[in-house]
Length: 129
Image 1 (cartoon, rainbow, N blue to C red):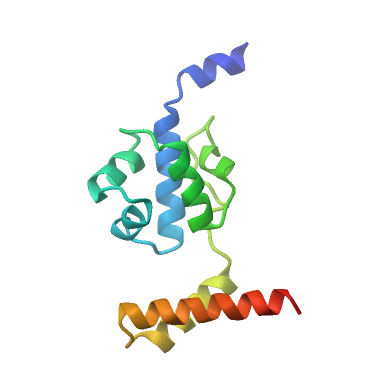
Image 2: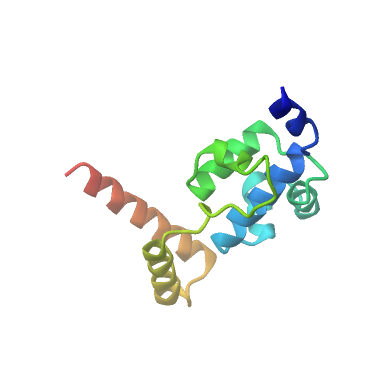
C-alpha cells in the first residue's frame, strides 16, 4: 500500500517529459527536429518535456523508434528524481554518427535523404546475407 501512495505524489508527465528530454539530448537531436518528426509544434514539445502536457501514446511509440529504445524507458525512475543512465548512446554509435556527419557535411537535405536511403538499403542487404 505504501508503494501506491508514493506513486500518487509523482507527476507522471514530469517524469516522462524529463526522460524524453534526456533521451533527446543524449542523441543530439534538437527540439525543433523532434517536434517536426512527431508533427507537433516546438512549443508543444517544450510543454511535454517540462511535464506541463502529457505525451500521447502514439508519440511515445514514435519516439521509441526515433531514439531506438523501449517505450517503457520513458517511465524509468518514476519513484525518484535521478537522471536515467540508460539514455547515453553507445559510444561506437556516436562515433559512427559523427563520422557520417563529417563525411556528408556539405550535402543538402535532398542529398542527405538519398544517403540515408542508401545506408538503409545496404543495412537491409547485409541482414539478408
